Length: 113
Length: 113
Image (cartoon, rainbow over all chains, first blue to last red):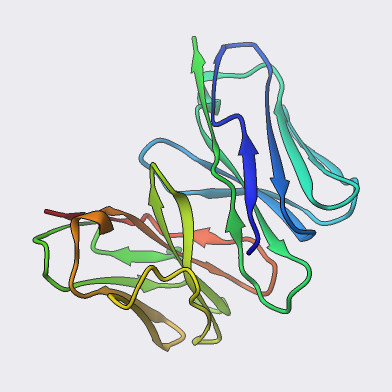
């Protein structure tokens, strides 16, 4: 079945440093989504990328979707303590008619002030 | 809209007991997902429904787990009998259409002792 992998599993940074998490799918995706989960909270949708090679920005966050639609990345510039949480990528497989949304393992980000 | 509503928020039960988790999706959403989150296995998709019909239940761990969606505004996930290894946070999520963003409920933290 479809697998979505993320690295790294954990990332500790000093406030002001940059952060990047990478996502890889075993199958081609129809789209890639990113979610953020704060400690003790629930996943909250951040963004969706649909097109091959697409790049989107949200303030200090930059999201990329690979040309083959199998990988993606999230980059945060100049992290702040409010960025703390676990970042998940999630994707729908393109090859089926279903709508199975599979999540990666997540990257847990901690930011030291 | 109040978002996806799950109940109870916390459940502590003894091994062997039946547990029922409840979810009210966002009105008008066609898809409903049940996920289980643990440290070891991350966010696992258990089952999802489209227009109240179960589409993919391949993630349901075993026959002790069952899920129903009797109407568009209500779904249940039942575990009978429960076991300590079922302890996890169970999330319900809904989405408005195929391949769209998922809106998560607050989750039910289940502890089986």
